[in-house]
Length: 564
Image (cartoon, rainbow, N blue to C red; front, side, top):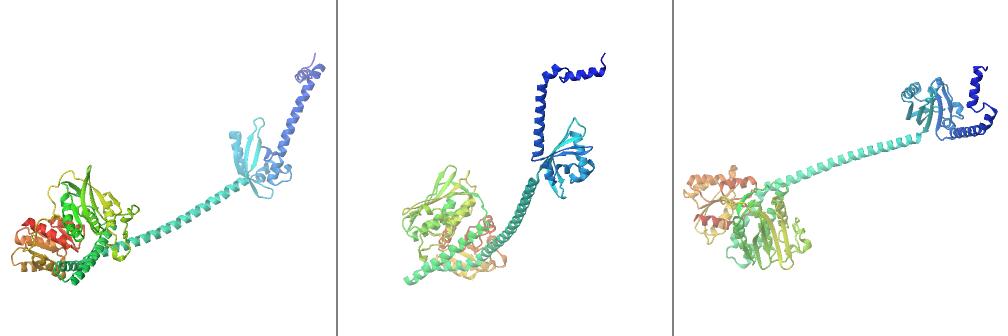
């Protein structure tokens, strides 16, 4: 009877194919083939282990390093992998820069998840330096505490990252430095801009403040020269008077344009929109430029339909006045036409002339400041080239499109488009009136109030030449004394008088004294909106210094014609 141990041995031998001679004989070739395959596989893994580029090791969490490949040894600066087989007590201090604390942390991570992948750390080299590595650690499940590790040297990558970080830091510093430089430059530019704006504002304020003192003597000279022009003088003296008149006219246009450009630059002009009959706007212009056109040998035609527009009377008048002035100035023969065309709910105001025309490539340049076309000599210059620049700026402020068409040798058409009013104005405004037939001035008693003696003298001479009985006074008290209790037919007053008294106050006082609404006209160099609003409330027409004699005569004739 066989023993149990023999039975077990026989069973094992049978399982391995060694139970009998025949079995051994039949399974031996297969066993040899399988052993060869295992040996080949083992040699392949051994070759890979020894020739791998990256470090490979096997370690026990209880004993320490068991195996290491040559790549790991070279990575750590050792001659042989055997030099890296540290026991557990030396593993932490010899391998990990982080020491025992890092090894304990790795142990906890492995026990928690059976693996640690993409773990970046620093390993200690033989010479005491360190190497940056990326480790993948795998805890083998079939052997307690056995760890297989794969180590890649990432020093170059870390150095590249450091270089990139350094470049980024340098770039950020350069950007920061450049930003500071730009901020400093912007501050300097801002200071320079503020200084320039302050200087420009100071210039504008000075120009506005000095305008009264500049325009007063110019106004007096203009009135005196106009008085001389209407007298019968010898030809030689008449020529001198005409040249003086032209010089004063040029100075007046230049000063007026400079004041307007100054106010437009500092946005001191604000539109005051209201509804006006079209003839209220175009009538005074027709009266003003009728004599201008006749003096230039031109025919002026004005076509005014019965329409109402919504606009700023003063600004629109300035636009049309500049366009008419240019048309009369640069047209040598023929005619000038001021007309209108209705376009839907808007109205196109047009100024036609039969002048020399404008080249097509210069149609935009004419709106530039101080720009005049086809002027070769100084003697041929008329104005300073600000008229159309003022037109363009005022039109932009009012949002009125400006258009120009021209043909060389045939003339030009300037037009602006203004909105039509939905309804007619309730009552006519006290604005510059239309011309009337006949001459109502002779025999009329006019009171002139001005604190400048030169203005009183020149105004008295001009009005007296027109046949008026003139009473000239510097203030209210003198006016009452010189009138002798008899009310004048019309009052012509300066706005700014002595002791901060205004012409409006003098007019109101005289109306109260005589208990009747004496017609009046204010002449002033003050172009402020405050002055204009005050005169509108009083219902008194406004003429700006230096006043044009033709315009003054037209306004006085209209007022006295209505009163008569």
